[in-house]
Amino acid sequence: MVTMKLVAATYAFWCLSTCLATAQTKPVLYPKLSKTLDSLAYVDQWPMQQLFKQLPDSADRDLVQVEKENFARHQPLLEKIVRQVGYPGFQQVGEKSANNFWLLVQHADAYPAFQRQVLELMLSEVKRKNASPVNYAYLTDRVAINAGKPEEYGTQVEYKGPGLGKAVPRSLRDPKNVDKRRAAIGMEPLQQYLDMMSGLHEQMNAPKPTVQ
Image (tube, rainbow, N blue to C red; front, side, top):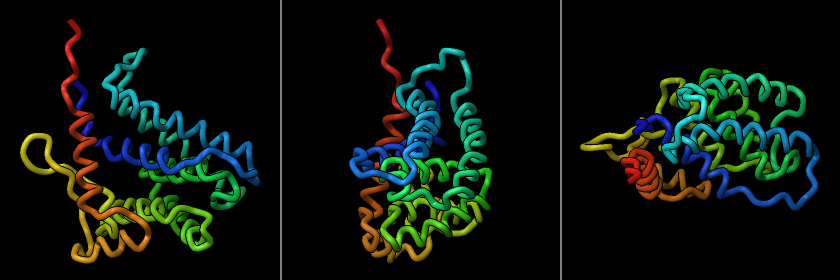
Protein backbone atom coordinates (compact mmCIF):
# COMPACT_ATOMS: atom_id res chain seq x y z
CA MET A 1 0.00 0.00 0.00
CA VAL A 2 1.24 3.48 -0.86
CA THR A 3 1.01 5.99 1.97
CA MET A 4 -0.67 9.10 0.62
CA LYS A 5 -0.95 11.58 3.46
CA LEU A 6 0.74 14.27 1.41
CA VAL A 7 -1.57 14.01 -1.58
CA ALA A 8 -5.10 13.94 -0.16
CA ALA A 9 -5.46 17.72 -0.41
CA THR A 10 -4.25 17.65 -4.01
CA TYR A 11 -6.88 15.09 -4.93
CA ALA A 12 -9.52 17.18 -3.18
CA PHE A 13 -8.50 20.17 -5.32
CA TRP A 14 -8.96 18.05 -8.42
CA CYS A 15 -12.38 16.92 -7.20
CA LEU A 16 -13.34 20.49 -6.48
CA SER A 17 -12.31 21.82 -9.89
CA THR A 18 -13.94 18.90 -11.67
CA CYS A 19 -17.22 19.32 -9.80
CA LEU A 20 -17.30 23.08 -10.27
CA ALA A 21 -16.47 22.99 -13.96
CA THR A 22 -19.24 23.08 -16.51
CA ALA A 23 -19.22 22.16 -20.16
CA GLN A 24 -17.92 24.92 -22.43
CA THR A 25 -21.01 26.51 -23.95
CA LYS A 26 -19.92 30.12 -24.54
CA PRO A 27 -17.21 31.16 -26.98
CA VAL A 28 -13.93 32.05 -25.29
CA LEU A 29 -11.18 34.43 -26.32
CA TYR A 30 -8.45 31.79 -26.37
CA PRO A 31 -9.82 28.37 -27.35
CA LYS A 32 -6.36 26.91 -28.06
CA LEU A 33 -5.13 28.04 -24.66
CA SER A 34 -8.20 26.45 -23.10
CA LYS A 35 -7.26 23.09 -24.62
CA THR A 36 -3.65 23.51 -23.50
CA LEU A 37 -4.67 24.14 -19.89
CA ASP A 38 -6.98 21.13 -19.91
CA SER A 39 -4.16 18.94 -21.23
CA LEU A 40 -1.71 20.23 -18.61
CA ALA A 41 -4.26 19.58 -15.86
CA TYR A 42 -4.76 16.02 -17.07
CA VAL A 43 -1.02 15.37 -16.85
CA ASP A 44 -0.93 17.13 -13.47
CA GLN A 45 -3.64 14.91 -12.01
CA TRP A 46 -2.84 11.55 -13.60
CA PRO A 47 -0.33 10.45 -10.91
CA MET A 48 -2.81 11.49 -8.22
CA GLN A 49 -5.59 9.43 -9.71
CA GLN A 50 -3.30 6.40 -9.94
CA LEU A 51 -2.32 6.84 -6.30
CA PHE A 52 -5.93 7.22 -5.26
CA LYS A 53 -6.82 3.99 -7.04
CA GLN A 54 -3.67 2.36 -5.60
CA LEU A 55 -2.55 1.42 -9.10
CA PRO A 56 1.19 1.03 -9.82
CA ASP A 57 2.94 2.87 -12.61
CA SER A 58 3.64 0.68 -15.65
CA ALA A 59 7.24 1.92 -15.66
CA ASP A 60 7.60 1.33 -11.89
CA ARG A 61 8.19 5.03 -11.21
CA ASP A 62 7.61 6.77 -7.89
CA LEU A 63 4.32 8.51 -8.70
CA VAL A 64 4.75 11.14 -6.00
CA GLN A 65 8.07 12.07 -7.61
CA VAL A 66 6.45 12.03 -11.06
CA GLU A 67 3.86 14.44 -9.73
CA LYS A 68 6.54 16.81 -8.41
CA GLU A 69 8.38 16.68 -11.74
CA ASN A 70 5.16 17.53 -13.56
CA PHE A 71 4.59 20.51 -11.28
CA ALA A 72 8.09 21.81 -11.98
CA ARG A 73 7.80 21.25 -15.73
CA HIS A 74 4.47 23.08 -15.94
CA GLN A 75 5.43 26.22 -14.04
CA PRO A 76 7.43 27.92 -16.85
CA LEU A 77 4.50 27.31 -19.20
CA LEU A 78 2.11 28.93 -16.73
CA GLU A 79 4.43 31.89 -16.33
CA LYS A 80 4.52 32.32 -20.12
CA ILE A 81 0.72 32.25 -20.24
CA VAL A 82 0.50 35.02 -17.62
CA ARG A 83 3.01 37.13 -19.55
CA GLN A 84 1.06 36.74 -22.76
CA VAL A 85 -2.58 37.06 -21.69
CA GLY A 86 -2.59 37.99 -18.00
CA TYR A 87 -4.89 35.95 -15.78
CA PRO A 88 -6.82 33.42 -17.92
CA GLY A 89 -10.27 33.67 -16.41
CA PHE A 90 -13.73 32.55 -17.46
CA GLN A 91 -13.98 34.99 -20.38
CA GLN A 92 -10.55 34.08 -21.71
CA VAL A 93 -10.64 30.27 -21.50
CA GLY A 94 -13.98 29.23 -19.97
CA GLU A 95 -14.84 28.04 -16.47
CA LYS A 96 -13.34 24.55 -16.71
CA SER A 97 -10.00 25.71 -18.10
CA ALA A 98 -9.83 28.68 -15.71
CA ASN A 99 -10.27 26.23 -12.82
CA ASN A 100 -7.52 24.10 -14.32
CA PHE A 101 -5.17 27.09 -14.49
CA TRP A 102 -5.81 27.79 -10.82
CA LEU A 103 -5.16 24.13 -9.96
CA LEU A 104 -1.84 24.17 -11.78
CA VAL A 105 -0.77 27.35 -9.99
CA GLN A 106 -1.87 25.85 -6.67
CA HIS A 107 0.72 23.13 -7.25
CA ALA A 108 3.58 25.51 -8.08
CA ASP A 109 4.82 25.50 -4.47
CA ALA A 110 8.44 25.55 -5.58
CA TYR A 111 7.75 29.01 -7.05
CA PRO A 112 6.12 31.02 -4.25
CA ALA A 113 6.78 34.38 -5.92
CA PHE A 114 4.84 33.21 -8.96
CA GLN A 115 1.96 32.02 -6.77
CA ARG A 116 1.86 35.45 -5.10
CA GLN A 117 1.87 37.15 -8.50
CA VAL A 118 -1.08 35.09 -9.70
CA LEU A 119 -2.94 35.67 -6.42
CA GLU A 120 -2.65 39.43 -6.93
CA LEU A 121 -3.88 39.17 -10.51
CA MET A 122 -6.69 36.87 -9.46
CA LEU A 123 -8.17 39.29 -6.94
CA SER A 124 -9.26 41.80 -9.58
CA GLU A 125 -10.68 38.98 -11.70
CA VAL A 126 -12.72 37.69 -8.75
CA LYS A 127 -14.16 41.18 -8.30
CA ARG A 128 -15.08 41.17 -12.00
CA LYS A 129 -16.65 37.71 -11.60
CA ASN A 130 -14.07 36.39 -14.04
CA ALA A 131 -12.54 33.94 -11.53
CA SER A 132 -13.79 31.76 -8.70
CA PRO A 133 -13.72 33.31 -5.20
CA VAL A 134 -13.47 29.79 -3.73
CA ASN A 135 -10.36 29.08 -5.81
CA TYR A 136 -9.00 32.44 -4.65
CA ALA A 137 -9.50 31.34 -1.04
CA TYR A 138 -7.54 28.12 -1.63
CA LEU A 139 -4.67 29.98 -3.25
CA THR A 140 -4.73 32.61 -0.49
CA ASP A 141 -4.18 29.89 2.08
CA ARG A 142 -1.52 28.17 -0.02
CA VAL A 143 0.46 31.39 -0.36
CA ALA A 144 0.11 32.07 3.38
CA ILE A 145 1.36 28.61 4.35
CA ASN A 146 4.30 28.84 1.95
CA ALA A 147 5.21 32.18 3.56
CA GLY A 148 4.97 30.78 7.11
CA LYS A 149 1.77 32.72 7.87
CA PRO A 150 -1.62 31.51 9.19
CA GLU A 151 -4.42 30.62 6.80
CA GLU A 152 -7.58 32.65 6.34
CA TYR A 153 -9.95 29.85 5.32
CA GLY A 154 -8.48 26.62 6.72
CA THR A 155 -8.14 24.87 3.36
CA GLN A 156 -4.61 23.55 3.87
CA VAL A 157 -4.73 20.60 6.24
CA GLU A 158 -2.66 18.04 8.07
CA TYR A 159 -3.79 14.86 9.82
CA LYS A 160 -3.55 14.46 13.58
CA GLY A 161 -4.77 11.94 16.11
CA PRO A 162 -4.90 8.15 16.43
CA GLY A 163 -4.63 5.91 13.41
CA LEU A 164 -4.65 7.82 10.15
CA GLY A 165 -5.66 10.96 11.99
CA LYS A 166 -8.30 13.56 11.24
CA ALA A 167 -7.92 16.63 9.06
CA VAL A 168 -7.16 19.89 10.86
CA PRO A 169 -6.01 23.24 9.43
CA ARG A 170 -2.25 23.57 9.41
CA SER A 171 -2.70 27.00 10.95
CA LEU A 172 -5.58 29.44 11.17
CA ARG A 173 -6.03 33.12 11.89
CA ASP A 174 -8.99 34.07 14.10
CA PRO A 175 -10.60 30.58 14.20
CA LYS A 176 -13.81 31.86 15.79
CA ASN A 177 -14.69 33.82 12.65
CA VAL A 178 -13.44 31.44 9.98
CA ASP A 179 -16.93 30.25 9.04
CA LYS A 180 -18.02 33.86 8.49
CA ARG A 181 -15.09 34.36 6.11
CA ARG A 182 -15.88 31.10 4.34
CA ALA A 183 -19.61 31.84 4.04
CA ALA A 184 -18.89 35.28 2.59
CA ILE A 185 -17.42 33.67 -0.52
CA GLY A 186 -19.74 30.70 -0.77
CA MET A 187 -17.73 28.02 1.04
CA GLU A 188 -19.18 25.35 3.29
CA PRO A 189 -18.54 25.47 7.07
CA LEU A 190 -15.00 24.50 7.98
CA GLN A 191 -15.96 21.34 9.90
CA GLN A 192 -17.89 20.04 6.90
CA TYR A 193 -14.81 20.55 4.75
CA LEU A 194 -12.55 18.88 7.31
CA ASP A 195 -14.87 15.88 7.49
CA MET A 196 -14.68 15.55 3.70
CA MET A 197 -10.90 15.73 3.79
CA SER A 198 -10.73 13.10 6.54
CA GLY A 199 -12.97 10.82 4.51
CA LEU A 200 -10.80 11.20 1.41
CA HIS A 201 -7.69 10.55 3.48
CA GLU A 202 -9.15 7.34 4.85
CA GLN A 203 -10.25 6.22 1.40
CA MET A 204 -6.83 6.88 -0.11
CA ASN A 205 -5.06 4.97 2.63
CA ALA A 206 -7.50 2.04 2.88
CA PRO A 207 -5.91 -1.39 2.49
CA LYS A 208 -6.04 -2.59 -1.08
CA PRO A 209 -8.35 -5.61 -1.48
CA THR A 210 -6.46 -8.86 -1.84
CA VAL A 211 -6.90 -10.56 -5.21
CA GLN A 212 -7.81 -14.22 -4.72
